[in-house]
Length: 102
Image (cartoon, rainbow, N blue to C red; front, side, top):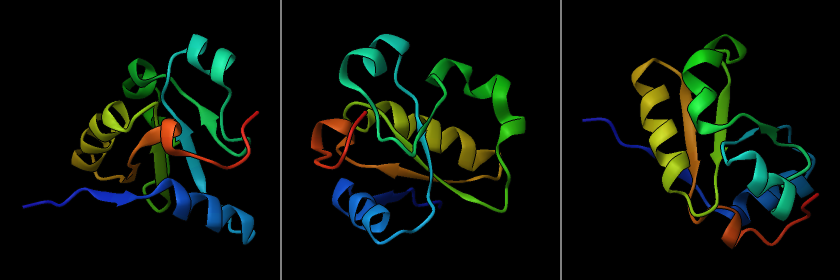
């Protein structure tokens, strides 16, 4: 059986601070991004738009998916993993992220 890969907000922040290039995708709604901001390196693609945007993902890259608490991003990860993509869920979401937000 498949095991969903996860990463903590602290690990994401540490890797970004160390200069690593991460493929971050924030799947929250427009209003959430506007009000709460997002990690500057993250690309914003709403959860509902993911199925129609598969062409933007490369199956060779690992993508870290982010939402408010980690639930929506988990669903996105499960969906993309079934399609053959390398998707990792940031557990705890933005409510647990202490790094820079814009």
